[in-house]
Length: 216
Ligand code: DX5
Ligand code: ZN
Image (cartoon, rainbow, N blue to C red; front, side, top):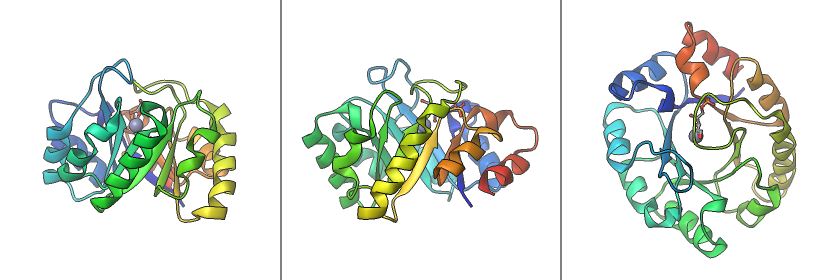
């Protein structure tokens, strides 16, 4: 049993309301929102007003993935815009600011989460294991949808689950990048509980069927 969070990065940006309605109608669990600043990653996508607009048109949880430099500058605004989960990257600031950002997110009643890029070892997120509601393991280099799934990230999930069981067993493990009807099986076997799917979801002819396969 897993949750699927389709990413609106692969939806039609001229009609995001239709995108979130498609997500809801498919039976998917959350809406994944990819925020990129052109600094932390070489792409620019959406910002705070778009998150607020999405909040008005869906009751599904908004899983907001901040791929931005020094996220502490903006976490309050993303919380107030309506994020349910707010993920920051461990590589995006100093350990002090990362901790402060996670605490700030929690202070708004929003679930704090932390993500690590493919090249970042599990040790980098160890100081935050008991401070987060979710850890997002990237299975592509962040920045773009439609990239190839990196199966060699799976040992990170296994290691994180072992460590979390000691200090924060309720913490969710999420994967993002290249997840489809085939790679989702590998992810779930390694312990992933929330699976982001962008291109696979929006390309699928039978979205409800894909959702069922991922959730199974
Ligand atoms: C990539 C984003 C992903 C992206 C996934 O930086 O964080 O959420 O939308 O897209 P797919 O599922 O196509 O790899
Ligand atoms: Zn993402």
